[in-house]
Length: 112
Image (cartoon, rainbow, N blue to C red):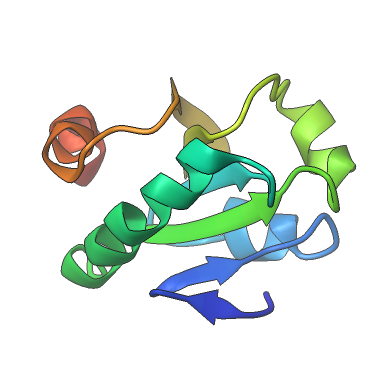
């Protein structure tokens, strides 16, 4: 795990298993890219959720251009793709940016 930006940690192919698959809390992974406008729109939304839901959910991001192995493993075809992992398995996948309120509604079952 490298840098934190707005409460969201950045992971890489090298530490994905340790940081995401082995995590005790559910982990929301944002598959992102530097050139992706909707990814930038989503950054403050995820930062706010990361702070509010820190006890129930961890949020990380991974750059698909710099970390292609993980993106290929999980069949990521577009950015931003949000994938929630629980107990090392992907349990939910959402594609595209969305407002905070809608995202929280879509994550209710994971946060319950």
